[in-house]
View 1 (cartoon, protein in one colour):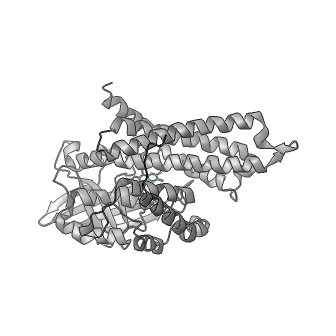
View 2 (cartoon, helix red, strand yellow):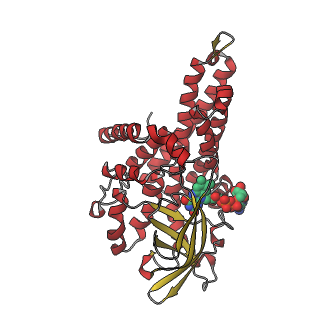
View 3 (cartoon, helix red, strand yellow):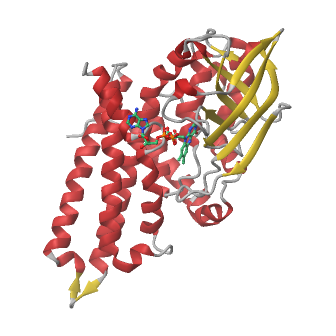
Length: 380
Ligand SMILES: Cc1cc2nc3c(=O)[nH]c(=O)nc-3n(C[C@H](O)[C@H](O)[C@H](O)COP(=O)(O)OP(=O)(O)OC[C@H]3O[C@@H](n4cnc5c(N)ncnc54)[C@H](O)[C@@H]3O)c2cc1C
């Protein structure tokens, strides 16, 4: 039984998205992997089609669509294997901070551009000295009249080179309690004192422009704060449910894609006079992976529905983030093994999929941090 009941409109939308990706993304993915970045023009094309920030209300240029449109976009993007085009990060993780917490003036200023693809966003929390322990960030935000002066460094920032607008986590050094001292600010690219550093060379997600960012006496208007002063930590916590759920969707679709390509390969490749899919070990391995994938699909679809109903599923989403990511890693490994030597060759898509899967238990909160959150909320 299907857990999610997609409507006819959803299906039509999925077809349109798939066709768009087949034409505008899949043929260029290799080129972008080599370049280490996706051109901004693709973002604008997606914006023209209404494929960015589908949940943004009409008054700010969006269509106020339900969350399933985000799920569809993320799943179809996952099927392309082009992990560098981080539009789910923009549409479903970063822009929601603006939609939920920015002042009316900031929403009017930035949201239409986020929807059209003129503005690409990023979120900068992680620093060289700290990732998991957000309270230990050192980037400072100090009031100076009508301005905030930013100083510090961020690393591992997805869309770091392409970004036009940043949601930055920084702390007020005059406030001792780390949970009260963090705020979120909007910082435009090009603001004096905000420098984009080098693009980080990664094992996978090579077409993603993950970068270091630097702030040196960078002055932004005081009004660029999101929410109330001192509320940064709470806002981050409030939005993490959706962020981690999107990670579940990404990992789940990756696992499904890898198994699909592996089943096809094992039916075509022969050894000892028969397709390798006919060996009992191959069959058992494939069934093992398919079973885990079905469990993941049931879990993630249920989480999507619960999230849409406004339920607090922090425990379950934390469990899903680590379990589905690690399941996808197990599937990646099993699929490479079934490809034999070709699984280790770049010209076979399973090789890149394997590299791209590894990071899923690390970013947006490691598996260990997810287990820690689940344990805490379970009262352990
Ligand atoms: C490709 C990529 C994209 C990213 N994109 C972004 C982005 O857009 N914005 C952003 O802000 N960040 C981003 N990150 C950063 C990412 O969120 C961090 O790498 C992640 O949170 C882990 O932090 P860390 O790398 O500092 O590892 P550390 O925190 O140093 O952790 C190292 C190890 O110690 C373990 N550990 C740490 N604390 C505990 C604990 N309390 N209990 C048990 N184990 C623990 C971790 O689980 C991990 O195994 C990205 C990272 C990557 C690789």
